[in-house]
Image (cartoon, rainbow, N blue to C red; front, side, top):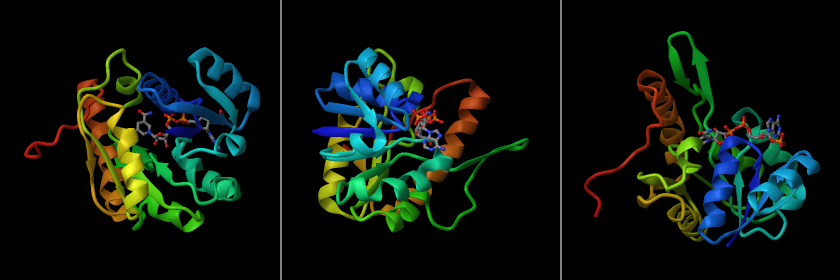
Length: 206
Ligand SMILES: NC(=O)c1ccc[n+]([C@@H]2O[C@H](COP(=O)([O-])OP(=O)(O)OC[C@H]3O[C@@H](n4cnc5c(N)ncnc54)[C@H](OP(=O)(O)O)[C@@H]3O)[C@@H](O)[C@H]2O)c1
């Protein structure tokens, strides 16, 4: 599987690239800046390119840019991405004095991203902290993926299954992204309260 990680120079994209490389996937990290992608890619032992070139010939694009830039980036890369499936990992969060809040928007970021792209959009991996993903051993937690296109979702679940020692779980249609993205606020609040990198394990599914 060839995976393009757009925004692959950030903590999450970098950790994802390392884990995927170790799991035998072909990885190309993208950046707005060619030199930044190239030098980090050389360090990680993967390929690097500008975002628009990175997505070409990928089986799956992971959009791992800063959440505030996710929609604009999807819009800008629409032509380059074409019909390739895109996995959105972003959660829009609001950091307030009272705690971290989920987005007040009615539709998830991933659903809004679907409006901008021609291929299927999936959402997932929100509960995997970059620090856990980049640790020496795969994190002991489950990973969730949702989406409306069965083939694209199967591909994203295959990717997710390579990231943790837990399970890659199908979380339903793309509308489930509202809950997955929103739950990130819960996790970040717990991380702050308990000084942790919390993850999720679902019980009752064998
Ligand atoms: N951090 C986590 O633990 C975690 C866990 C689960 C999901 N996520 C999600 O994963 C995504 C990446 O997280 P992160 O912590 O790695 O984010 P980040 O460091 O804030 O951003 C990742 C990359 O996005 C690119 N970027 C920043 N601003 C941009 C802009 N205005 N336009 C286009 N690209 C821009 C930068 O790459 P270049 O400057 O090289 O282009 C940057 O290295 C986020 O959407 C986040 O919600 C994060």
